[in-house]
Image (cartoon, rainbow, N blue to C red; front, side, top):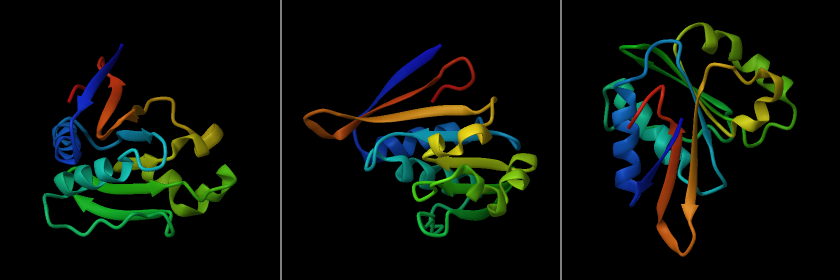
Length: 147
């Protein structure tokens, strides 16, 4: 069952990610869908800072490095940004199998995973609200988790 959550601004997006962090466990995979500028990186950054226990942690976008690695009390954190990936096989040398075996994996632009997309992942869709630049609609499977 999908649930839509109305997000008023960037602070509310961060708060939603912080709440989600409390539910995530080692082995979870979060797939962040949405158009360019939707807030995927804002969500991922808040999630990583919360999971790492460091609200001041520098969390650069992995747009050019493709993956960033962090430590947390729940295990390793893997943050992928696949925007620049053209073929899903480019993901394999980036530690993809390792990230699925141990840790929490966060993926921006998961549609580029192709057949590598895990079956048991939490898909989160973030969509801007037309004519309301700060607002977003966040959609996730409410049977698994609820923020």
